[in-house]
Length: 488
Image 1 (cartoon, rainbow, N blue to C red):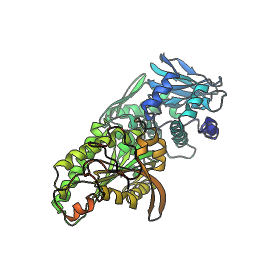
Image 2 (image 1 turned 90 degrees about the vertical axis):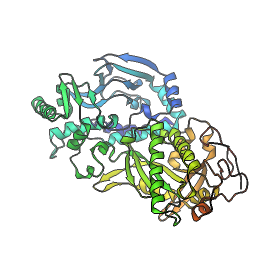
Image 3 (image 1 turned 120 degrees about the vertical axis):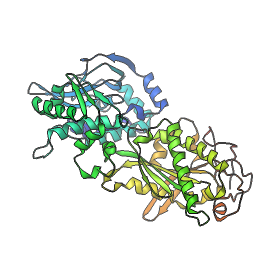
Image 4 (image 1 turned 45 degrees about the vertical axis):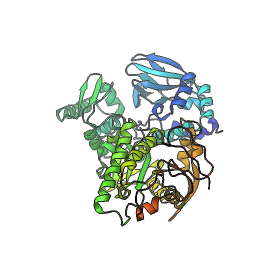
């Protein structure tokens, strides 16, 4: 079990990062339902009105605060003047350093509007981390995210304008929390906004007036409403590298994103005509998009690149990786099973899906990152492809060691991880381990063709139900139909 004391180094790094705003992943929605219940059981629920001081600079750090709703400002007092360094809102964790190093607060946190929060004693939170290694990993990534946040104010010698700074700070918060075309309101006054970017109030007034004329935002004395988050992202991005992915995706640049990579087995087999391939592609996209909708995950916020026989998806950090394994995977399987029951052999789909997590960067042509390469290599793992072909399963799912340890092992259905099998990935320059899972539909085929030969089951036994290799323990309803186990 990992001790919370291992966080000390990260806490020191965090203390050095004070003065940065937060575009990172909200903490609370990243937890599983079980983890949330465990934390609620050890917390006190509190409703804090605007102006309430949640904690004060230099006072002893005795508790951690999870903001469920509402907004707060984080500030320092320097030369008898308040200097705002960050805003924290729904889902954010405040004062996590208290769980690591019991000492004085480094900043003051004040409610900007009515805040609903969980108050957790520092020692209790440290014990919670000791019992939940996955949450510890999430917080380590949060520390990294806060270290790479945009600094307050304009660095000496920088050409960054006040308008770009305001747009960047607000976009960092608004883009991950706003659907395309939606509105987003921050309960922040114009003077507080000026303090946040260390700029004259008159300059901020001029910028906000320009935004109102152009339909980007509207402001009242104590609130700022974003009307066009995409335009705000373009102003704050200020870099052509964002143009390749669009401003609506700019907020996750350089952050740890979930990578979902799909690939249709035997897509190029000569038995398929071009019309067959168009049918397969259309069905694949309908399956995946429908599964996102069934899982209540925002398809519009997923960055996608078509890869001919599959698709690369970059899922923003605000969407928990756990939701991509469950319930998304189950819904993909259900839809794929229904499609294949009616499909001719030439347009039947065997879908390989890979999942990993890591930093992704945009460029004018698209996106790049080592995690994308690793996901592609996992899809091409020899044992993974061979077992999918041997069993005739509809769906093959493969995850990195990190995803297995931090997500699969802690899934909502106890024991589901036992249905996964560890495989070696040796593809090109990549040598690593991953975990694979086969599910759905190894059914009789109506014809014999090169495609059907490639996907027909070679193992003995009934051909209905999923076939899994190795010693497995199948539980829950992720595997549809008869839950048969074969060992060979």
